[in-house]
Length: 250
Length: 223
Image (cartoon, rainbow over all chains, first blue to last red; front, side, top):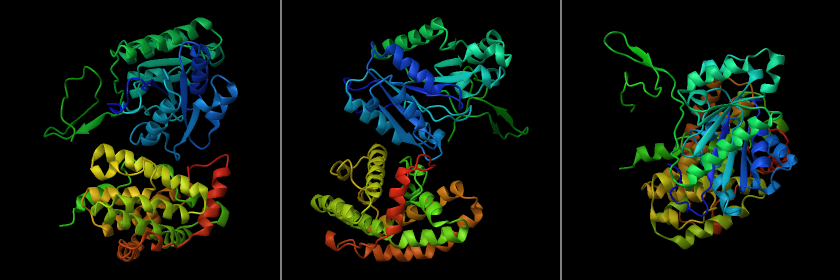
């Protein structure tokens, strides 16, 4: 689905990072750049809502040469920029890949939005959805396209769990049951083993992408919707394995 | 027969060409000039569409005519003339960014040889005119669609920037439809002008506002 004009030499692994405001997307990106920049050449595109604050944060963190961190302004529509109209982001990613070729990984940070915002497979090859314990232990159970079907779900800031009275184990269990076997990682920047697990996931994804065996999937965002019938209609969602309501969408 | 459906496709704000991130100068103008109601928005839209909007429409019409004629040299002459009509570097940069985005979209959704002849960083009116020609639309169609976008972009931004009733905003757009049709006819009359003779109506306050806007730390829109 991604651009067919790309040559293998310049095409990076494009990895999206989405999730609600304040869950730690920028910190996760800074962490990945810091830990992986000796193994991979990396670039970052940020999508701020009103400012280029996230790009500035990452530049000041000094995790990458500052020219490899670029901001895209999304006109107060962060969800549109990663989903229905990806043109600005796609051009920004391609420019970065061309200007610093060859890049191994380009991270695209979504502007913090709500639980329904996910990346289009036209923009990224894979995506991480970030939640944090401080947002409430029940958020994972609520599900939604990003939580249920992103390539990886992170439960971040687990070191704060005791202060916000969240049972991390339960939250991870809820997330796993919402995800039908897709991976969930608990993360704290203060716990090196969790950071290493995240890095290892990215390494394996990059390896699969390089070998051409990674297939981008699309987490959403189709919401449960209504179909009128003679009996009055039924509501259903498009969860994987939901074959009961197969139908065409025109 | 006019390919009306293609015109609607090109003029639709949902075309994924990144227009939603821009307010057409409304965000900075609202603050700098103290615009705060629907009447002020309507004045802004009328001012924009009769000045820089009209220039963009005439250039789109000229690009459309040049593309129909296969006159690649003339297409290439339009961008320097547009640069000369945009004293603000910020306005020039946005026009070229929007042109690039539009070219990317049209090239993907409706490939046509004329598109490949354009500068990848051509101005938006130039790309729009060529895109219109690729759908067999007329210079007047191209002009009308550009005029339409000139006011609908800032109008949808305005309901996010100010506390405005969206019905009042669309009432203003409805009142301006007659003006748009009239301007489209006048813009299309320039389709075959020498490039340096194309309209050059100016909107200096928009240029100043755009330069201020670039320096803001916090803004909702990219322009």
